[in-house]
Amino acid sequence: MIIDDDIDLVEAMRITLESGGYDVIDAQEGSKGFEILKAEQPDLLILDVMMGTQDEGFQLAYQIRGDSATSDIPIIMVTAVGAQTGFKFDPEKDEDFLPVDEYVEKPVNPNDLLDKVKRNLPVG
Image: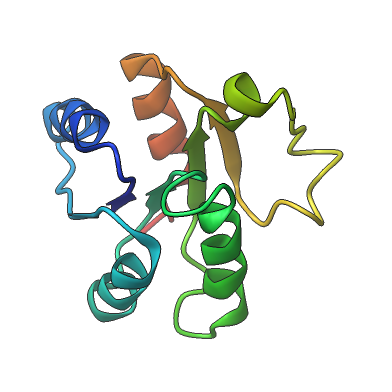
């Protein structure tokens, strides 16, 4: 699943993921995305940070991790927050603050995206 308000980027990631054999569902904002996430229980989530607010994706990641129905879904955060704000995250140092499995700055290389998805999908 992809939650991102940039429909062009969603479609580019969809093409990349579908070429890798993955089924893709999407939402363009956090609250609707969370509803779909709970209903569909996807194997993995690709999540943007800056959507309706500067930190909507962070808030959604905390909500996902705090809900027993969604807490185990791997999250790959794909964002331009660093480029737009100068704020840099280090997934190892900021692990407590950043409740995601991967953190990637946009633009994302399609092969890197496929590698990260494959690496984070649950086995079995």
